[in-house]
Length: 225
Image 1 (cartoon, one colour):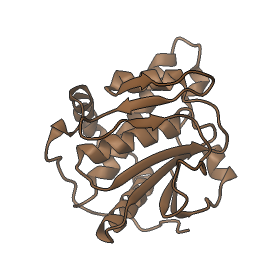
Image 2 (cartoon, one colour):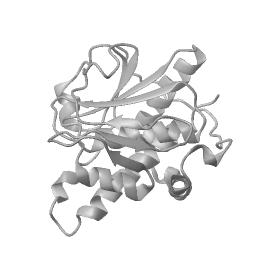
Image 3 (cartoon, helix red, strand yellow):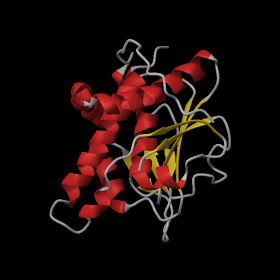
């Protein structure tokens, strides 16, 4: 496994067609692209490592597999997976597959689901139970993502040739090495769970969703095709 350390400096580009994603999602994306300049330099250095991985895979004509990992695969890692899929579609980056997983299994939290819906994703629950499955639509050109909580090494996730993106400090410490990963990048985010049941709940989930959206779109804007 490689821990990427080289920053990438590639020209950003505009999507060829903003209709690559759902109209509501496109409108949301257009508002957050203005926030790229607000990303701190230390965060950019880590995010650029993800862009470098994507660029190297594309140049080598290899699949781009990104697995977002946090402890419970309930909030931040799902935000990462879903926004990476949307960003790849928005910027017309080919052959990108996005995944998520945890060190434990819980459920795709309903508050995180709602935050994604408010951003413009079209989400349908396809099963019930403690760990329901959701279809997450973001473009008419691709099948919806299937989102549910799972461990990062679940059979539905890639077992090799992927970049592990650690979205929380706990998972980062628990998994210093991720089996099968050829690259590993840590970009931890604060957990909106801390605000569950409070008056700030909706605002904090939207804030975290927007932060992850902004940083993920920044990553894909750096990739040259």
